[in-house]
Length: 131
Length: 489
Image: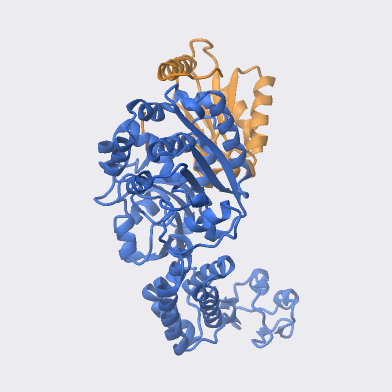
């Protein structure tokens, strides 16, 4: 990243990043892109999140599903690790818990490729401060 | 707030949402905007006033007003000052800070830079335990990215402010979470606390004014700057503002991290957010505050959780460990567990802590072995008070709390251990006895074959019997019995 030399620079950079994020969210640059976040804190990795991430990438590639897989920190659902958030274009994000390596393949096959819900969806039970 | 949304995420706002290894993700979520606004305003005292008015208190456990701490450090003049982030998270079962460091490291860097500007420090140090390798890795990545982007280092935003951050590694000694011990450890000395005053704000790292704040405290700072102190002060109770992250653990369905507004009740936390007690057992107590805290019983289920209410209830906020216990947990054993921890972690400098806690542990051990007397219970109480009054630092002064609080709330259970030589929860091995019900036993000999010490005797097809003197109470027989004929008394 180039150096941010002034406040105006930071503002410009933020706006740029936000609009590209928005573009991705609205799926205008790729209307089929599915975004997947895998919770990869110590806790998630210990329960197999690294494998899960690989499986999701490989399985999606095999099936030609356009995905963007990224890592995040802990989503705070220790009881349901590994946890994976899937955002389909134009839809609200869905958080799946208990996505063990075995279930990761099923997730790609059923929810990413098809539109079949899997058990283990974690309801969002919090509000988040908006900045 | 809607009924089903009891949680409010401020410190955990980015955890699980952004890629912690990508600074652009953080900037897109208004990252470094608070630092920009503070530097632009160019009025350190005004920023300190914002933090003061927000009512933010130290999230590491003590609950000291953060703004006041900053103000004291800012008023002590010196050629060099330091900002220290206390990431030496050590309470058993607590992992709030790790989660923030691994999920949103830039928020801590930004807050430390803001703190540095306010008190006039150009150097920041993060004291982190070496057992957190992933947090360390992500912090190092974050520092590098921030330096490359010009958000740390020299002349930030071209406004003439310099700030660097380095890491210092701790070896995982519990006492090093205490700020004076932490500073000694960073200087390369033994991690032992020293008497305050002088406070670190007067003479801290290398004898210079130093402001030490916990990870979660720092995580709140950028939000307070961006949303304003009025917004922050509108959340929580009269004297405890904002939210608190808890690590909810123990006999509860939804184990995990939660962030709730101050003033929420334990009942809401346990039954609505936590999903209730595991296997529908009966609630017994909640332990908060780690080895320095105490147990809260059923009568406190509806008490609003804040710093002062928890202290009034005989516990404390602590750093945020919250361990839920059900009817199968023995409170004497719980106190013993925490004392065992303290004895392990005592630095040994002062005798009340080094010797006193060892004696406390021995008395508790005696009670769980079924050898306790009523005099022992008196000793427990007296010794606890002496340690509380005479220990040098926070670790020693609070170490008897688990004992005092369980004695206060579960006196009957202690007496039962001592007088009846029984453990109502069935946890104390020495106080258990396994009995075979002759009406249910068909003499299959499965238990006798499973018994590793040959304590079970009996003829085939005749009821068996356990020789109590030889029984080591391992429970192997219970597992093997298909007829539920063996019970624990």
